Amino acid sequence: MANYETILTEKRAEGVAVLTINRPDKLNALNSTVHVEGVAAIDKWRKDEAVRVLIITGAGEKSFIAGADIGEFAGQTPISQRSNFYERTLFNSLDTFPKPVIAMINGFCLGGGCELALACDIRTASEKARFGQPEINLGIIPGGGGTQRLTRLIGEGKAMEMILTGDMIDAQTAFGLGLVNHVFAPGELEAKTLELASKIAEKSPIALQMAKEAVKLASRSNLDEGLRREIDLFAVCFSTEDKEEGVAAFLEKRKPVFKGR
Ligand code: COA
Image (tube, rainbow, N blue to C red; front, side):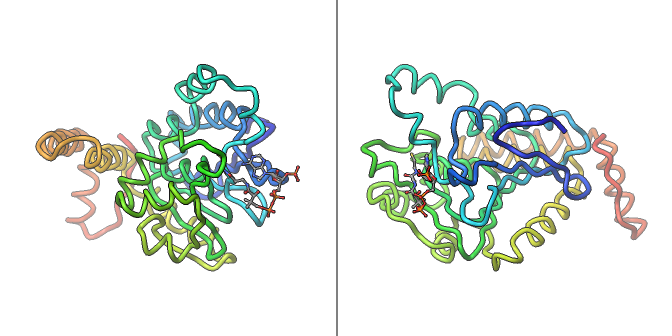
């Protein structure tokens, strides 16, 4: 796989790619190189049939991602910072990635790190993980989707408190809020997350894509539009060999083998 300066990419299990943000000495803070390299890696995986599920994590024991690289804020003008975030960031690249993405949160998950996790589809966390949107302590607000995605995920009152106080919460509290799907012992996080990813990677890639798109519509459209588009996406699945295989396998009492066709 390609050589990058700030990320590691690998295929860990059948159908599962792992993207590791690799700046452990800076707690994996997101600088502009991470965005450029991360977007490039994700672009390669968009059309790579061997990749069915993506896991994102942070290097080292301590941190998933401790936010945007604060050093890069110095010297930014409103216009340059605005265009940085409008252009292709990891946040919007993940948002349009058609395959399931799991954030495997191994430590600090702060600011842009929490926003990146929110742009993923499923979040697993170590018991040691800490979550927060501390931007308010820098005199700014979240700009990578935090005010919108966090609010949709955990509700306005809880999101408001996290964003207005900047306080950190622990993994069990995040689980209670629905911010993470699972909390695992630190030594089990990787194996359990890979198990979950592998289970998803066995499904029809086309059905996964349609399912992801349909579920995301729930927070992005009104109910009537969402229900209508769900039927269209459901109907698309009826054009696939995978649907024939899934139905035949059920009737023949065997495990289906989905090819993504
Ligand atoms: N941007 C740039 N560098 C960061 C960073 C960030 N968001 N978060 C951590 N780092 C760097 C530190 O500057 C330090 O670098 P140095 O060794 O060259 O001085 C290194 O990572 C280790 O961090 P340190 O603060 O020494 O670790 P800690 O265990 O004492 O504290 C945190 C951990 C996460 C509480 C603390 O680093 C922190 O508050 N980070 C900023 C979080 C934040 O506000 N994120 C939102 C940004 S919008």
